[in-house]
Amino acid sequence: MKWLAVLAGLVAAFFGIGLWNATRPPMVVEVALAMQGLAPGTSIRIAHLTDTHVGNPDMRRARLEAIVAQVNALKPDLIVLTGDYHGGKLLDWPRTRLEEGLEPFARLQAPLGVIAILGNHDESYWTRKLLAGQGSPKLLVNSHVDIGPLVIAGVDSAVRRPDLYKAVAGIAPGRPVLLLLHEPVQLLWQKAPRPMLALAGHTHGGQIILPFIGNIGDVITGKEPCPRGLCTLNGQRVFVSSGVGTSWVPIRYGVPPEIALITLTPPAENPAR
Figure 1 (tube, rainbow, N blue to C red):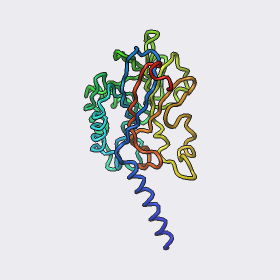
Figure 2: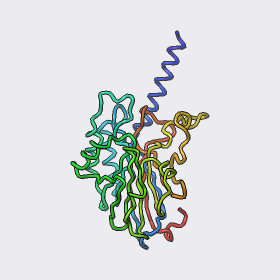
Figure 3: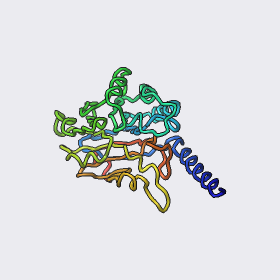
Figure 4: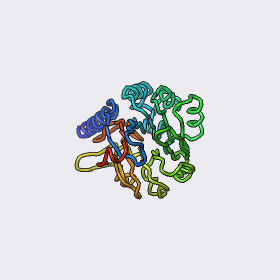
């Protein structure tokens, strides 16, 4: 029976350390990216927040509110959210209300606006209704909005009907387009109809990456074509953030929570990336 006690202790330690990893304040990952079509001299700082997954025990409302304050303190020009605000938790007890995962976003502030899309865990009808009622962020569902220096396009994951063509329909040729999508693999489902820079989440960067074993998600759900960072999929550049929350189990190993702070500049001013 002693070995059972040792095993139970090891399991408890594994989950305890993993929960501590998952609930640390998000690190800020700064990235500079060139964007075709931006006017000379333009520089846009974007705070990219994704996969908040509100729910017990790792993403209670108080923690989400602290993350919102952290994003605001970065003073970005634009804030974008790429989905999965609620749901996906096996241990969410007592059950967290959808409002707890959305209401804190109303306090996000940026001169060029706060723009969001839906992820695969998001309930489509009520999430849209609640966001519309609180007024912010602006939700894009296979649509776009012109914010001046660039156009933001967003595709839908909540009902698994992402439509790149519908999202960018009517945008003038030559205009710089920032595409928001939840799942990077969507770029393999549809060929992008025009050059764009994409931001995505969904992967959690793997969430659990163990020594000698690697990414646990690769074993369970298959290898992601772009788990984290800057990639090219189907000829389209996409930056994938590992996000701040967790899905299914509330632990992280090897992939800390992160907020991406992305600076966009014209290609001539940022030739390397």
